[in-house]
Length: 188
Image (cartoon, rainbow, N blue to C red; front, side, top):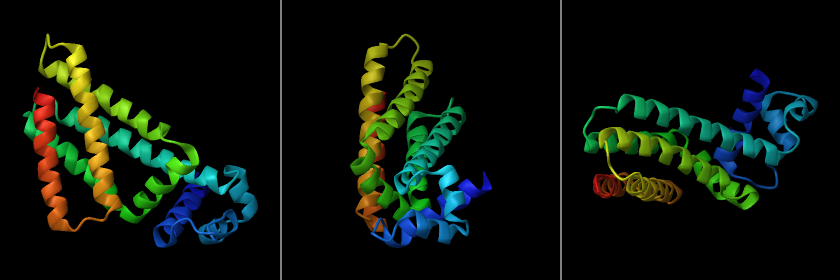
């Protein structure tokens, strides 16, 4: 699996530097990874398969982060939990912002929105469970609606912040506003 990681990292570095240009292809990725083109094709049938794998890796990171966050935040106040969640969401995108921008631009054009929607549904399910434990006897349909709105808003705002590369002061203001909106939405 070291070869797969080397190929994905090589593709990620190229995307970060240049985006998807005509020179972003399997030969270039293999050279950057230090593997033969034959080795690359053992694992990936095309550059689109590599882009999909990069997105899948991102989705897996998000799921792991969400699992850890909800485990950690069982008994903390709502505003603290929301703050932690937003910080984690931003941290994912801040770790490799250029890569995230290129993936968010290219992936839907090539493959559609399903991976994003699947992640939204995954996080929404975790959030419903979390809210349900915090408010026993609450109307589950109401919790589901609040979770739906909160998750879609959080994703849309986070992607907007990083796609537009907002400066730090503006990013901070958006983060604080998003926290207020999410706390209000989730508190009902």
